[in-house]
Amino acid sequence: QVQLVESGGGLVQPGGSLRLSCAASGSIFRLDVMGWYRQAPGKQRELVATITSGGSTNYADSVKGRFTISRDNAKTTVNLQMNSLKPEDTAVYYCNAMDWRAYWGQGTQVTVSS
Image (cartoon, rainbow, N blue to C red; front, side):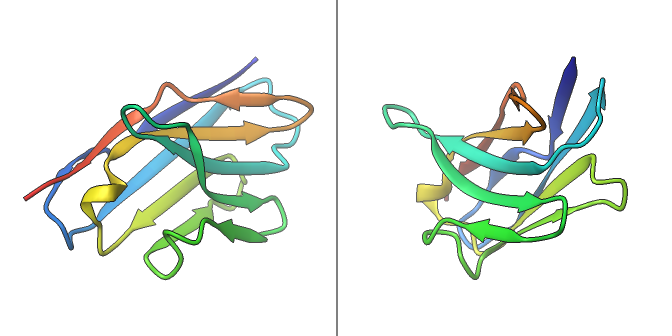
């Protein structure tokens, strides 16, 4: 039905920046909420940030002031600008979108290491 394709992951030093993007395609009527989750090895998946079709945003406390989530004009692409990255940000980042159900991307690796 809906496919999510992520890009932008990679290796960066502490204090550096990365921008993740997620493009939705397929049978799309309206994606009410899009967002990003992450999962580090041995840890549970956690919410990073979400954005609604109306532009309302929500961030995990651990990323407030450092990460910024946004959507394109068509509301089918979600971006995550990550600044001042820390080693604890290292994880697989997953794109998420919802209309009447939830959709997940394949995940993209973000590694923050000196």
